[in-house]
Length: 149
Ligand SMILES: CC(C)(COP(=O)(O)OP(=O)(O)OC[C@H]1O[C@@H](n2cnc3c(N)ncnc32)[C@H](O)[C@@H]1OP(=O)(O)O)[C@@H](O)C(=O)NCCC(=O)NCCS
Picture: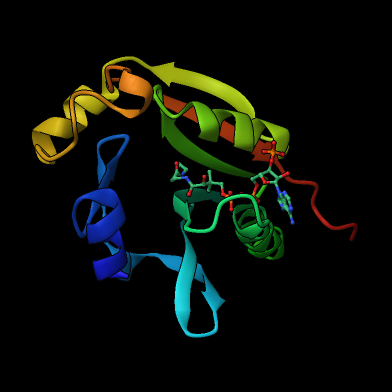
C-alpha cells in the first residue's frame, strides 16, 4: 500500500483536513486483476462516521471505482455509520461528477485547505488537474440508511 500511495499520491502518507493518514492506520479494499493491483480504496471509522481517505482505479470505466465505494458503504452500514464522507479537491472535476452520480452530496468547501496541507506535505502540486490551481477541499457525503431493527 505504501508503494501504491507513493506512486499515485506522491508519498506514503496523505494529508486531508489537516490530518495525516498513514496506510497502516486504515482499512481498505484492493481490486485485483489476477495478482495485479488495479484499484484501492482506504477508509477509517471515527465518531460513528466512515471517511474514505483515498480511492484509485487504474482501469477507468470498468466499474472498479463504483464497486470499491459499494464495498466501503457495506462495511459502514455493518458498523452502524450514518454516513460515508470524503474530501476531494477543487481541481478534481471527474471525482466531483463520479461521487455525485453515486449518491454523494456536496457538504462544504474549505477554502485554502490544500494550501495548508502543502505546508505539511510540500510535494502537493500548486497546479492540479486541468491546469486548475489546487487550493480547496470539498467535502461530500452519502447518508446511509440503517438496517431495520
Ligand atoms: C474517480 C475514479 C476512482 C473512478 O474510477 P473508475 O473505476 O473509472 O469508476 P467506474 O468505472 O466505476 O465508473 C466510471 C465510469 O465508467 C462507467 N462504467 C462503469 N462500468 C462500466 C462498464 N462495465 N462499461 C462501461 N462503462 C462503465 C460508469 O458508468 C462511470 O461513468 P459515470 O461516472 O459517467 O456514471 C478514477 O477515475 C480514479 O482513480 N481517479 C484518480 C484518483 C481520484 O481522483 N480519486 C478520487 C479522489 S479521492
